[in-house]
Image 1 (cartoon, one colour):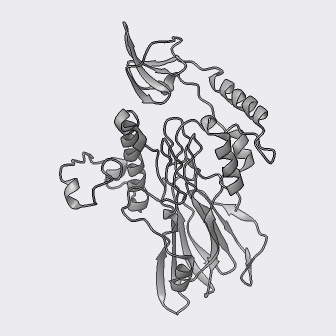
Image 2 (tube, rainbow, N blue to C red; image 1 turned 120 degrees about the horizontal axis):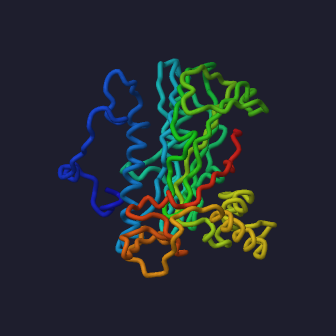
Length: 365
């Protein structure tokens, strides 16, 4: 509803004309003896991501609504649960809501909102650090925006938050840590925009001494390390997924990248590697042009496609650089450069050049 009818208040009547077709045996309709658990923060969340991406692709291909299209917002709800006896001597259980502070996706004309949260929730909010510490045995070291988490694009996805905390007021609790999106980013970008960062979660035994952080080795967790003891000498650190970017990062105005570097949103390394902006305490314009030309050349090296080109007018567009054309042999998808990528289907990726790159964010706490 926020995507197709943002001006209508949330109400039950909106779901009455909607039919959900989900046969038994799917990931989201698992049947015994398939294992299940944490549906609201796992399967339902990624199902929502897929639905929102599909809806926004339709908006992006519709001229009247292109300005409202965006990628995926806050693609993950990472779980941190804590339980035991609190600082008041009472049994307690905590489901930390801070992971709602993922970044929202960029639009065709503006960046996403930092820590904007999911679009599928009517009123996303997280508690103040002080409130969390008041009601549960938590001791925060920081809660802040995480650099390089927003999906790169002509318009950048909003940054995600990151936290680090220990146990406060008691000696030990039990912690349950699990997530998705630690290996693959869920916050997909749109129309050439890159996805937001993956989740990075780590645990440092003995990282606190008398309430002060100290140097220690952090273990990088996978997606579901599970249940573990956590003491007042340990530190859990995690950063979440930023929003997906919109458009090609090489089309981002270098002055916007410069502002991102100055604000701490983007590192100089990411500026050069992804945005093609060379930074020497200011934007090096000649070097930036060379770097962007180099990246573009690398993208088309070894590209396959159909071997055909087309210089006619498009019948319709799937995005700013993907178009639908037709000739005597039928319809096809072609790029703004005139390269025919697919015939008879929209599976244009089959004809595009594919490349992989290493993560720009180190797995350190």
